Amino acid sequence: MANTTLERIYPFFIVDDLAASIGFYNRQLGFETDLLIPDNDPFFAIVSRDNVRILLKHITEHIHPVPNHTRHEWARWDAFIFVSDPDALFAEYQSRGVAFHETLADTSDGLRAFELKDQDGYVLCFGKPL
Image (cartoon, rainbow, N blue to C red; front, side, top):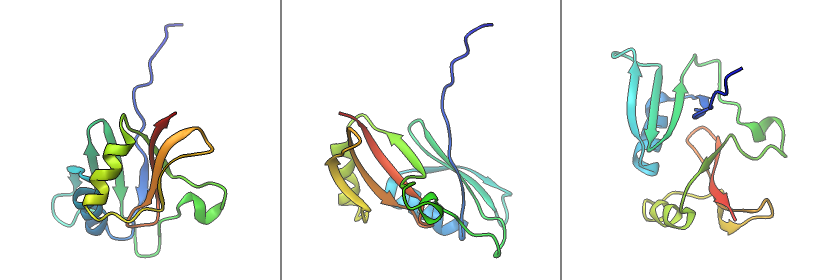
């Protein structure tokens, strides 16, 4: 069997308000919108920054986001995003007025990291191993 390299993974989040979610990622976190489907009255989007992409989808008013921590308190994160310089990204996000779920620190998990919640309560951890 040939070895195949896995390249990336993109989290897929169910959202309540697609426009608000896109706005959060773009304005607060410096992402850009790569795709909206369909063009008129979109329900699906892909936002990206560098090599990170997040898929966002609004399904119906009856289907809501279910972040991991709402099902299992010990499951803190919905996505871990590896960053080369957590301190610089933390400073950038501070300058944008982002509210942090956990501030920048060396964690007991062996990371230099910080956490934030997005528009729908998904917890994103940005960091790298110590």
